[in-house]
Amino acid sequence: MVHPISSATQVAAVQPSTAARQPAPAAAAKPQAPAPDTVKISVAAQALQELTETSVQTGQEARAGDVQAIKLQAKEAAAQNPTK
Image (tube, rainbow, N blue to C red; front, side, top):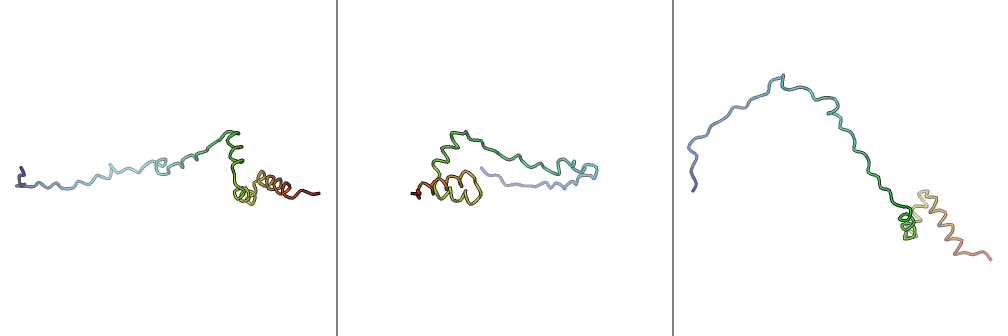
């Protein structure tokens, strides 16, 4: 059953004194940047990743300066064009 409210009490807002408002410590003002996440994969996983890589990915990596990709492209080019 619902009962109507017959009276309401109003409460005045209380402002904190200046003594209660202390400046925050300098350490809290500057949060530290989170440490970057790093992932390390095994040598076998790296080799598998390189074996399953497409020629497009190899080309992109070679253009970006990946020495292994550059060597792989040179090896594939030599295999396609054998000198007689």
